[in-house]
Length: 484
Image 1: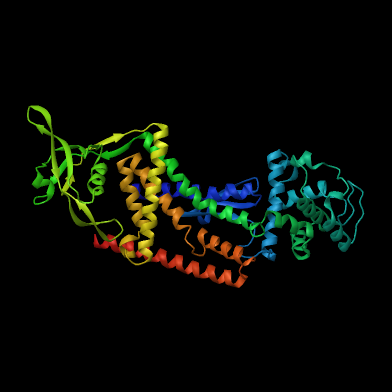
Image 2: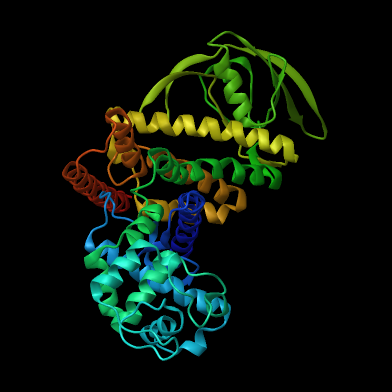
């Protein structure tokens, strides 16, 4: 059980990191501020801030998120959002001082450090007399007007920002420090900026917020997560093919009586060499070759072991018959068979780098096609959802089973989950990436976003659907365990 849980947590952790890193990298490259990169959902266990972003781990491991600046559905910042942004500006200043090695000279508490920064760096427009610069007080309205107009035109302070922060002050930072210096309180300064909403602050917010980016930029950022999972699959598969892929040898085990193979003379232990002149290297090759000729007679070349003698090579002709087989999607379909099962002998095949890359792309494309088909059959009702869907309990159970088989099996299972995560996230369901992309499509067609109340309602419906789905798969997992 412990192996299953740890395997599931590690696999999901890898896939979450891949997914969220896709969002993160494209957002940062597009100039969008990423406030938090979290592996796991709240409550937060711990986190560390580097640059503009806090990197955190949550107590709920089966998930993660990238929190960008801006409300989920609103274009303009609410008071709470703008207050949060001003606090991010505060953290930027403290982080810059920490990285430059001057934080200790400012104090120990954040409020104390910001007051010290304001006293040393704020432009000479603050309220009250500053003996360092000899400035006199100005009115609140005059200061607000000056701050909103052009922070770059403020007189130079006695201490340079480069000496304390290692860089120049940004306009929103200069605005904040000036207000802190004028009011003598960080909290009062934040409150004043949120209430007056200076143009400098709003401009800086809009430049970095996700909702105010162009439609193309928002599409790129949202699409990056699912694409990262889909592209991760062939990368991991390439490593698997180079490491070595286990396969089942084409050696016959059970031969069903009354079926074409038994009637033609095939027996247990026979090793298939070729079908219709095409070399057979593994059991999958044999299965594909039998199904490929649509029931036409096939010539099978094989070797048969002999006691105290070398295996003798033989040939015979078999005519497949058509029977229904389980497709793996919860239904059955007619296929051509001859009535044989493998003995179970395994081998390992290793590929060179170029061959591994080619095989990984082909395998990923085939698996993606099967997954899309499986999802379509679940949606249209052909495949019973109770039979096809598994939740975290079932995934943990499968992860533990694959972990005991070795690296190739674990990696193959991870590839399947990565593709599933990427494909499912593209479904047009609110709260999923596909839901956001669907809203963007409507916005592109209409020339403007959907109304705020419509998007909020859709998000609520999406949340209910996801909660209902999670409840269903967990109950389904428990039901399968009880029945087994």
